[in-house]
Length: 158
Image 1 (tube, rainbow, N blue to C red):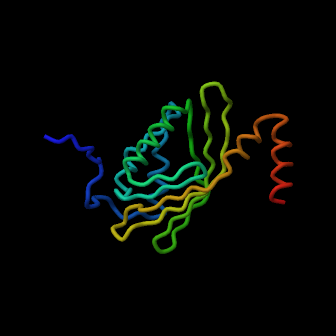
Image 2 (cartoon, rainbow, N blue to C red):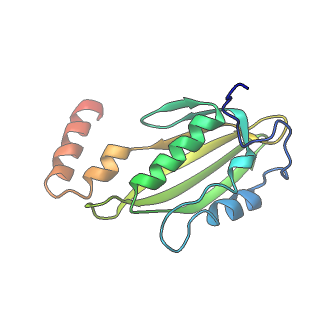
Image 3 (cartoon, one colour):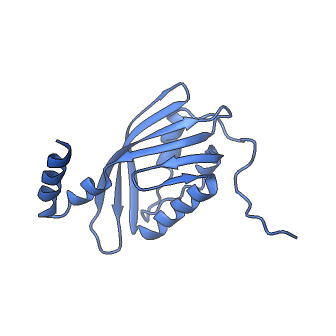
């Protein structure tokens, strides 16, 4: 018998189509009272051939994406996301958010960003692109480095 890595995601979707209201509802149920996220109820909304990209990585496939989510959960002492605005146009859902993260010995750090979800013809998320300035938001919380980082970025890109 061959040991194949089986995806927890069905080939045919068994989920309702995503709307602004359902995305807001699903994402708001993600964070528990201990400050740790649980994305298990959202994973069925992702297509098996998902493409994910953010400021630090590009992933292909739902299995790599779920593993990334689990790694983030293990590394964070606390993780919470507040969605401020959300809109849908055609097969694109956009939301802007603040994600507050805390690691073992670091203070809570807010990261400001937005996410573009692209829906497949079957209604599941085929592409997720997260946009944020990871280092800028982290440097804002480090006295002395905040000003230096902004000065360097202004010289390079201003």
